[in-house]
Each structure stands twice: as structure tokens, then as C-alpha cells.
Image (cartoon, rainbow, N blue to C red; front, side):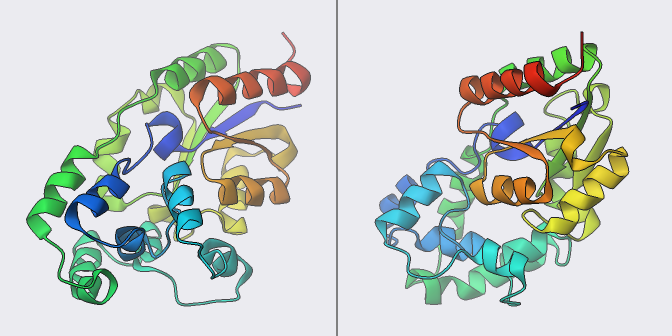
Length: 243
């Protein structure tokens, strides 16, 4: 029986991160997908928009997340190190500026990028937050499992009533692991005191969802609030707490 629901933050509780980055690349004259590579070390970081970019440029290399999770490569992108708390944001930014001419073909316009970064701050999917409140009232335990950045913690935690709704928060930057690494799913379940078959997991990244399913969680791929919450309702109607 499922008695626990684990939610991703970025792209699930919040609206998608860095939407419009493709338009910013085009406006600045950067090659398609190059800014995504510079920032994240991959072209599909931001879900559907990023994956469309990856398909458009006909990426020929294997998915870096999958390779790292399997141990086939050890040279992690700086963004992954940042999300694991292994470097701070200042170090990440300095390295990004240093790499920009090689990746973009010229130095990045830091002022224009700063304006884009500030304008790309996500909002909140309040329908998801209201669903969390309903689940809490129905007796479910709730948790957050997020790949995030330490320096962003105070901001994102203040965007919704986290302490009221959630029994635990597993933040990659505090535990030294990130999705889709198997260990972070195991840690989350251990901290909640549940087996994977007793928990549902909702995430907008297909790789994270696949890894969660491999671990044994009931994982739902969040493409939009209406569809994902309907799928969650159906799952819990069949396997959730008896009312």
C-alpha cells in the first residue's frame, strides 16, 4: 500500500526552470543548445524544451546522466557538482565565464545573461500545492526530493508552505548525491522509513523517473499538472490508503 508521496520541486511544484533559454540563445546569436551545454553540461536539462533542443541538434553522445549513474564516466559537469554541494555557486560561475568562449564561440555577455537569469525565476504550480494539502489531510506522508543548489535554498523553500506540508526534504546539495543516482532514492526511502513499493514519486525529468522505477518506486512523469495529478489520483485510488 502506498502511504507516502515524494515530489520533485523544480518543474513539479515550481513551474519549469529556465523556460525561454532557447529564445535567449537565439537573441544573443549563440548556437542552438550551446548555452544549455555551458550551464548544465547537457542539452536536455530543462525538460521538454531542452529535450527538443537535443533532438533538433541531433545529439550523438549518450545521455550524460545515464552514463554517470552507471559509473561509465567520471567527469561530471560543473552543474552536477554544484547540485551535489561539491562546489559553491561562485566557483560554478567563475568556471562558466572561463569556459564560455570555447563553448559559445565568444565571451558570454554577463549583463544580458544576468537579466535573463533574473527573468527566468520560476513560479509555483499551486494546483500541485493544493493537491499536496489534500493528500496531507487524507493521511499521506509527503516529502521533497530535489536536485538543487545550496545558495538557492532559502528562496525556493519560501515559495510554498514546505514546513506545513512535508515530513522531510532531501536536497541533493546537502546529501552529496543527485537524481538519477540510485543512492539518493535509497536515502530518501530510508529517511522516510518506507520501502520503495510504499511510495509514489513525481518528477518532470524522464531519466529521474526511469531510475526511480528501476529502484522500485511508483514513479509518475510530470509533463503538466492536470495529467500528472490525474495519474497520481488513479494510482492512489488503486494502491493508496483506504478511506
